[in-house]
Length: 548
Image 1 (cartoon, rainbow, N blue to C red):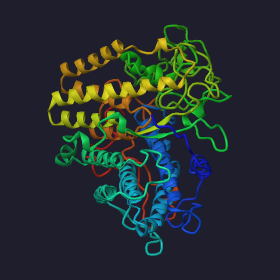
Image 2 (tube, rainbow, N blue to C red):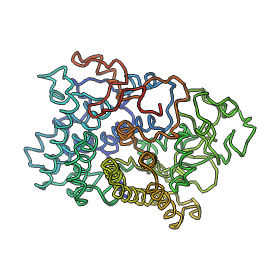
Image 3 (cartoon, helix red, strand yellow):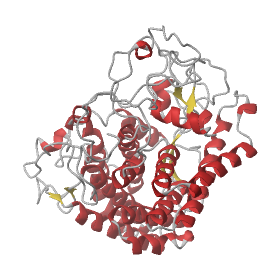
Image 4 (tube, rainbow, N blue to C red):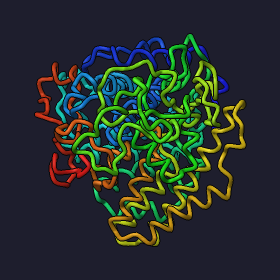
């Protein structure tokens, strides 16, 4: 796992800006609020800021997808109210005002000095960002963006055209990487390894081809493992540090849960219940329990603790009897999907984020408080494109093509790589009792059970298993699961409903951010969140996805 051992003063400054300011910056595509300019900064300062902003963009947008797919807890009883236009302002400004503006200013410098490695990295990150914007918003500015003199109000190009342009940018980036050039002063992801950047570029193209149904192009890459991220050694991730102040470089999820006032977030009941039922060996790494009993569970059948009010409330009438509601066993204290009830005094009882990916505590049945500095001290990651993720793409493509054997093999590879990576994070918590870590035999038994069930299941059952494992394996980044869910509608069996019986249609794409739609005359706000992105050919909501 890569460490940020050397961070200059300017990097600390930019980290502070990236972690604290993005949600409150004024938005439009006309002004660049960055302090970096061609007069006062070098090319490497641009690249430093671009890399930091990219990590923040992926983390924030990935959290939105995770909440929608029950990987993380979603507050708010209806989809349309939960994701109002103002909620997406931060992600939009990170992409357009920060990254794309910095790239536009940095490119002439890089071209003039033949800094091909810098150009390659920028092209790949821009292509990746554009694909992510389309996946989440649909039609977005591209051809007229970051050119305020000629296009003060850039139009939103069709999503399919943006995809085509983004893939072309990635191809250009790979060509630049092949030409070599001066190393980046700070390459936080790959340490100036051009081959790993090339693999990332091809992995992003795989993701795009899977989404837009270009099977031939997907298979051309997937059938050449050396071309994309097929080994965990090439995982693309952002590494946080342990610095507590000036600036705080710890994982934001760690900061939310490991503080003097107790855990600040709830975990989603569905994913904890599902992993507990499956006996998933990653569970002690994902979640840290501060309490050994959940009100309403078998350890407390009376459910009389006011700290979990739903434990004494009747089950929602639209929840099937076998659907998890309110109380997960064994002290896994979370919240149901869309529960917007008030916050009781449970911050030292609820389950906190674990050692993966937040850099928190490993769960060794200590049941102590999630305190500042404990566990890994916040030195977690944003998992962005991992080898286990590309294996899941291969599994999905194979299953869709009816190649069940190849799908099973890829699923097995994804689980093997994911569990090994997650277990490696146990070393961050030096105070934990490692006797609670799953043994090799237990891990192998779990993988064999999942893949065996997959082999024996019918087609629907295979999609259910792949869907569950897709969500679990992507814990820490909900971008791909959000896409998977809209493409396939799986998992369906047991995926927790919204607590409100009438939550409205599922978010097929997000509203345009308020500060863009309100100032750009060429962008018309969407009528609702049911507008489907170009590759989403499934029936409209609320009929699809079926679990909503």
